[in-house]
Length: 86
Image (cartoon, rainbow, N blue to C red; front, top):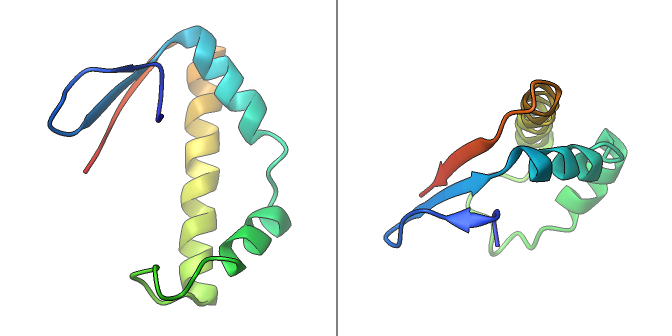
């Protein structure tokens, strides 16, 4: 499950309470670039729809760092988060 409460049945619109946002921050905190690279390198190339190379990993790492910072700011401000997926 991608969060605490799904707000739409046709696609994911997910609500994460401020309390749970703090838990997300704690879960993301120990993830470093080396750990993520090992997990990235373990992706089955057949199932992955993108080039699995250094440039794609750099893109993935950059987005992870941005998400980590976003959740850290939300937690510091005691804010909930709503996100969507397609």
